[in-house]
Amino acid sequence: MRCRKTGPEDLPQLRQIWALAFDDGPEGDEDFFRTCLQEAIGFAAEEDGQLLSALYALPQTLVCGEQTRSAAYLFAVATRPERRGQGIGAKLLAYAERELRKRYVSFVWLVPADGRLRAYYARLGYVPGPCAQERELPAPRGRGACDAVGAQEYAGMRETLLLDAPHIRCSLAQLRYQACTDRFFALTLDGRYGCASARAEDGVIRVTEILPDASMLPALMQGLPGRVCRVRTAGAGSPLGMVRQLDGAEPVPAFYAPFVFDE
Image 1 (cartoon, rainbow, N blue to C red):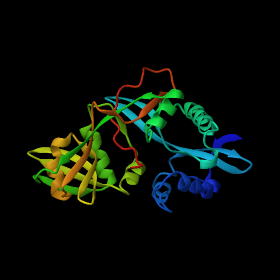
Image 2: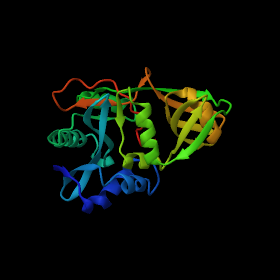
Image 3: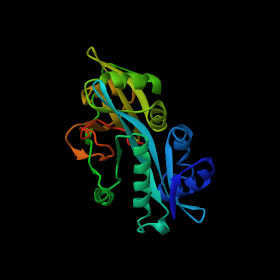
Image 4: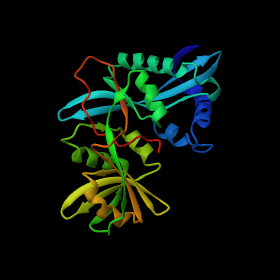
């Protein structure tokens, strides 16, 4: 078995591994491959011409005031069901980390799907990273203004609103991937400005990001009404992601990172 970076010729097998691992329909990978594959770094474990495991590193930037650090979000880590439990994923992850270190990536982070995977990554040296509060709130009465915006405009708004907070800056390609499920909004309420990434699901508003905080929900209701809001915000709460530092710089600070791209 060998680990290597992937190329265009691997796409059929990468799609197959995705379909076996993730329950998002026969073409659930289409949005990702259309929006993010070009900038992602793909890694795979291969044996006798068959890909056994795959993952993707999405380049990101940690912004801390005027300082920045190169980061990578490890996404869609998957192994063929019949080859799980054989240490293949761990070997592939170690290979990806070595290759990313060569590219001067300061740290990697990922979001385990459950407690079992969280314990697995802890054994591989990952430590708790960003936290998030997940709350279900009655939908407030709509007030203020809510206007739909595109990914590029949204990127500028979120950078302005997060100026003083250590946070992950997503690329336009990654925001366009998020926009395959969410809609982006510019918010105005009582002279304040904000933005939100959200979607409606059977009367429930799933808010994956709202800035500067949940006090802007009444404005969001003007453009996306519903009965209940399930809101993710930064701050003390349940661990959202796990981090592994690849360089010898200062420890990675607590940072804001709402998008996990696979919900």
